[in-house]
Length: 388
Image (cartoon, rainbow, N blue to C red):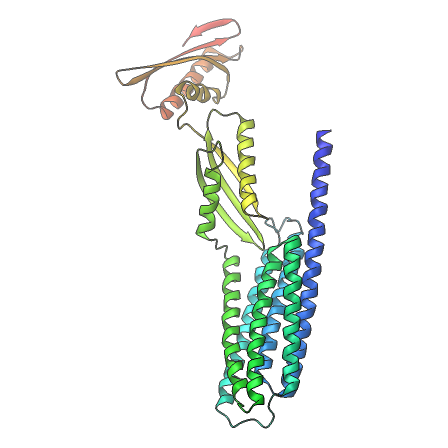
């Protein structure tokens, strides 16, 4: 009955995730179509009207096309499960696409900057941008506003890193197009080189944005992670009830998913079930703070602040051949700890094997508690009892 409930819950969660995925990809597809239309309009009108600023803004729109397409691919791969060759999933496809797109856009931006400088040093052109170019820029402004409104509503409704990224790019595109409109406006009143000046400003902005994209995606591909994020995870783990300390924290990012491999220290005398509960709580606390993360928790025993009797009993119980431990006692005299314990062994065990187990127990106790002096082990098999 419990297994059926778990399967139903898992199936429901998968259906919800699939529904969210469909909504996100739908919004991104609309955004992609709108910005692609703006690129086509600006590029064609830019060539016809001889507006370098409009051409550069069309390349900026093309950068948004690349970014939106990468985000769309990332959203699709996000729901694709890991396989034998991609154990961490397929999120790196997003970073690879962003890297290649960023490099291409940077080279195009450098070319247009060069063209802007050359044209500013040349005589005024025979054909200058006019109202036709202005209409193309206004169309792009309208497209950007539409995307901003669309993405803002979608973010409020379903959230998502990919939608937020596209939202920010839409805002940047809106600002760059505003620069184009200003440049064209100055051209219409006689400042012929205003178009080239606007083109130069946009080219520099485009170089900055493309390099920023290249830098970010290169970091993702080389598994660079923010030390602040690692410290944040450490703080979350330490704040979890039952955790004594945090060991190694390994983190990497693949697409929108953050993978964390965390080692925690627990009291050595806690039960395995309790250790599993604490580990599950650690995982839940991290996921609550880092949405979409995948967490692996390892736990190791710690003898810190554990009563010596419990420590001794735990050490003896983990020795192969020991069936039970009881009557553990210890006292301190002249700085040394004297230990006594009863150990149960299999009734078929020989005296020689029992002595071997006793030596192992003694050695392990002394390793963990070097202050230990004399150790008395009384072992029993079946109903007989003998002192070792």
